[in-house]
Amino acid sequence: MSEDRNINKWLITITVMLPAIMEIIDTSVANVALPHMQGSLNAGTDEVTWVLTSYLVANAVVLPMTGWLSRVFGRKRFLMTCIVLFTLASLLCGAAPNLAALIFFRILQGAAGGALIPISQAILMETFPPNQRGMAMAIFGVGAMFGPIVGPALGGWITDNMNWRWIFYINLPVGIIAMIMCAFFIFDPDYLRQKSKSLTIDYWGLFLLVVSMGALQVVLDKGQQEDWFNSTFIIGFSIVTIVSLIALIWVELTHEHPIVNLRLFKNLSFSAGNLIMFVVGFALYSSIMLIPLFLQTLMGYSATDAGMVMAPGGLATLLTMPFVGAALAKRDGRKIVFFGLLLGATSMFIMQGLNLQGAFWNYTWPRIVLGFGLAMIFVPLTTVTLASISRTEMGNATGLFSLLRNIGGSVGIAMAATLLTRYQQFYQTTLVANVNQYNPVWQMRYENLKQTLIAKGISAAQADTSALGMMYGAVRRQAGALAFNHIFFIIGLAFLSIIPLLFFLKKPSHGENSDLGH
Image (cartoon, rainbow, N blue to C red; front, side):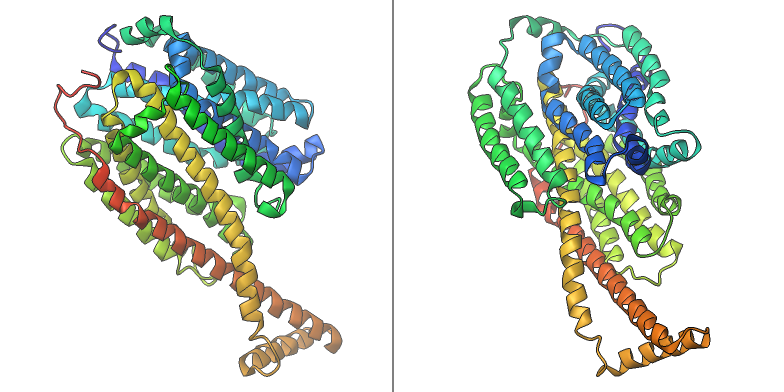
């Protein structure tokens, strides 16, 4: 990479960070604007969520084949094509006349965006010498965290002050700058130029990958909405997922030039790192979905206030990442990940104690603890997992690594949504058993409420009905809080459950001569 042409590694870093940040922001920016899209495109709630699902499906399909596509087309050409396609798709999404067109252009945008992160990671891992790779991943991590922090806030502000279409148009200047910088500062290394001549195309692998990843993402995204396996739609897609995944594994392990190099999983350190990242994705995405939901549905926070609770945690991650990157040059990355997982679990166990009487700070500081933990997990885990991968396979490895994080996130969100519904029903049934006229505490509360309403000039009959309604509302809120607490506890256990896998990670060497593939 930087050995071929003497280009400043920081210029290369800025060049690959721009498209990556653009893609990361776009994953979360549309969430806030969904109600506005629904109104202007005349779509139902079920239909409009396909704006998010279609993007994630296309993303999941392209992620694992990034390395293969880079070898077939040349990495620079492929990266530039993806930036152009992503920018063009953003323009078309903004101009979409109806929902069908918007979903089609979101698929195009997701497919183009899927490759941006793995390619950026692969280029960074090659550009920096081994002893500086921790810092390279820290810089990448700052960009990766920048997206989820800025995305929802930016999306909300643009939607409120301009129009939802501008959340897509905003990509145009970034895409054009990224395209120009890529043309001048990114070059294919020799091994990519040599290998691309002799590739046979794995058509079956391509077909099975598209089918399996697409079907899996649909199952995870629509499962709770369709009531899981009580729906023939979900059962059908689940069967397609399982059959095509089994076929994909068999085809990829027997093909000479597979689209997804599953042989990489023979490397125990790489497999363990991917499994840890899957669970971290599960825990991170589910907790980031649950915290604002808790604040908005049970505490009456506005979307902006809920965002303010989340922001300090993101800030903690941003501030910690450069220090973690610097520490990685001298310390064992596995120990840093260990402390990160402990912090993640601790923050979840603190959230398990959240109740409906908490103030702003009660909800903010566990999120800050989680923010520190995430900085100590992401950077070292990426560096250690990819340290033992040869240069020629780096594109494949980063694609698989990103895919497992995303699938972990989808599984986490799907499970959290399902458990929330089930636990709320369970706790409501349990609590209602204590709400009766023979319970003196209930009787006292009920009478107090009734008398208060009568004192405000409401008739006795109406006060009776209103007091009952208010008591039932309180029971529902308490059941909701208990359900959230239970799920935070489960996520905390998930953080702890992957600690034993750290023993399988290979200790990276910090020497200059341990360069990839040498």
